[in-house]
Image (cartoon, rainbow over all chains, first blue to last red; front, side, top):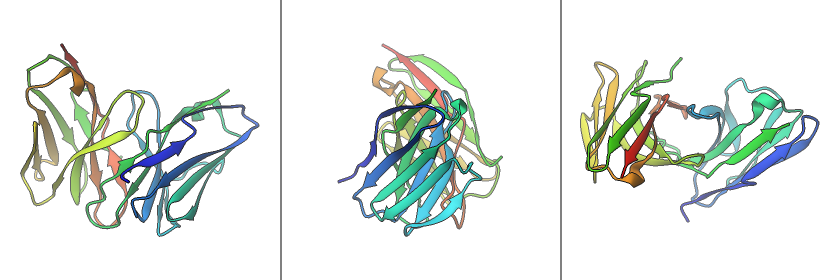
Length: 113
Length: 111
């Protein structure tokens, strides 16, 4: 299994809603990532987990809350988002080591109304 | 910013022609990777070149790396309509998990 699965594919939420994005991989990768991508821009790193511990937080606002319940799952909890948070949210995973080749999921398209 | 710059921002060519995209970066790197993204979807890893390598080939792809100029190029030979996508270089920094993407080149291959 060489896939990273993200759900939902599309999400529309109001600014007062609480929702979650989910990511799952079964490749035995011990590093997992959240990236945010706006239209016609490159992915921007948000969070990195290694061995289920948060190792990088790129100064992301607290309305985004990551969680790594086990080595296969990564969640991104969303609360009180702003319309400018609308974007494609990409999950990725990688083997730990020097090469750091990322395997991406298809993304969750988030629209905040 | 650690992000690399890529040029051109957009490139339109005919099927069968070669496409060359360039990437520059700012600090010392462990390796440089190229990824492809079809519209609105996830990125797919294409090729990795290590900091001690100068050139690498994979099928119709050829990547070069010049660490003295902090630059890399991706050549796609004999392009096909299916190569239409955005291409990003990405640099992985020594000692960390930080993979940072360049601005990207949008390639259009006309049939």
